[in-house]
Each structure stands twice: as C-alpha cells, then as structure tokens.
Image (cartoon, rainbow, N blue to C red; front, side, top):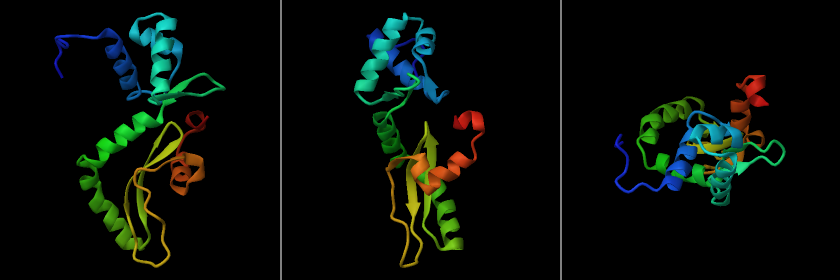
Amino acid sequence: MNDSGPAYPIESVDRALSLILAFEDSESITVTEASKFLGVSRSTAFRLLNVLEFREFVRQDPRTKIFHTGPALLRVGLSAVQRSDIRTTIRPLLEEIVKQVDETGHLVVLQAGDAFYIDCVEGSKTLRATPRIGTVLPAHVSAAGKVLLANLSEARLD
C-alpha cells in the first residue's frame, strides 16, 4: 500500500472503499458511524451507503436501518478466496477430518448472519451432502450456519 496516496485521487471512490474496508473490523455500520468514520456529513455518508447498497456491496436491515455486508462484497471476497492459498492451506485438514468420519465436510464462515461455503471435501458414502462451494445461505437455514450461530454470545446473536 502506498502511504502517500494515489497520484490522481477521487475522493468519493476513496470514501466508498473506506466504508467497505470498515467491515473488516465491524459486522455492521450505521449512517452516524459511517459519518464519523469518514469525517463527512450524515447525508454524504448516507448517499455513499446508498450507492453501495444499489451495487449490493452492503445491505440495509429495513427494521434497524443498520448496514451489513451485501452479496456483491461477499461474492468478490469468496471469488478471491477461491483463488487464494487459504483453500490449499486448509484443505489437508478438511480432507483429514472427512477421512476420519467419512462424511462430507464443508469449510464455512459466518458473516453478518449468513453462512458462506468456501470449500468442500466429499465423503465416500453413497448418500452424502452436495458440495456448496460459493453458496451463501442465511445461517439459520443451514446445519453449518446453525453450528456457527450456536457458538455466538447472546449479544452477538441479537
């Protein structure tokens, strides 16, 4: 990363990308938090979040008005993961687990209430789970998602 900044900065693009990067440290963000984070007015923060929502990089909970990561951001992230070394690093462990239990094993991560299927190793049994690599499901509708939700504190679960 170049600490001196780009030679031809576009402030709105920089702000939008900064908002996306804010999700590295937080599962959600409010308009007020975005405003303070960027040092801009609430209306500017809302417009940036609105554009990110239009492009599906964030989604807004209609009840709480809080913004969470959206499917486009997750698709981009999963696509990057599928091309990265993380799968080659974790895959031997996943294969060993599947070998021990002879059941299909999925590598799944939890993000803002969704279960993201990153990798899969199939067991040898005739009846087995279907590989779901790249699938994004609400965590409460998948077994793997329920396991991940079960390990959250009540405050995080809410």
